[in-house]
Amino acid sequence: MKFLDEAKIWVKAGDGGKGCVSFGRGKFIPKGKADGGDGGRGGDILLAGDPHLSTLLEFSFSQHHKAGNGEHGGSGKR
Image (tube, rainbow, N blue to C red; front, side):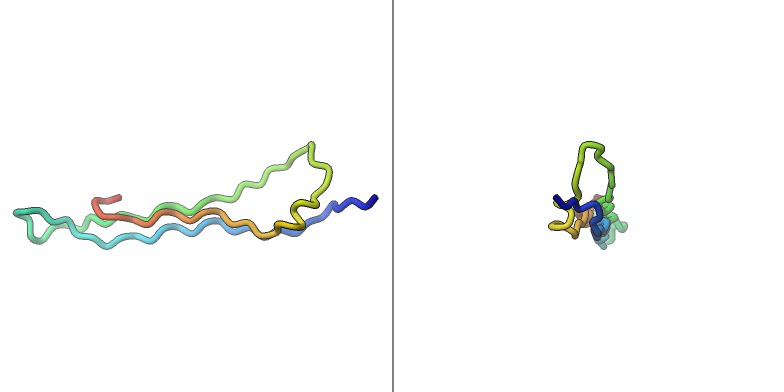
């Protein structure tokens, strides 16, 4: 029986969210201050070993892994 003990995988951390250009306005404040929020952080990639794993066969079928992207910024410094 052959064992696959080597697998190449490609990983990419998530992209950060886009910031928002926004200016606060109120009933009596026609020219408000900038209140746009920053975009959220992108997802991280964590790699952990498993001592109970006996083959890397499943990694040869799913080689590409990408973390999620960050949320976009919003008004009100969100």
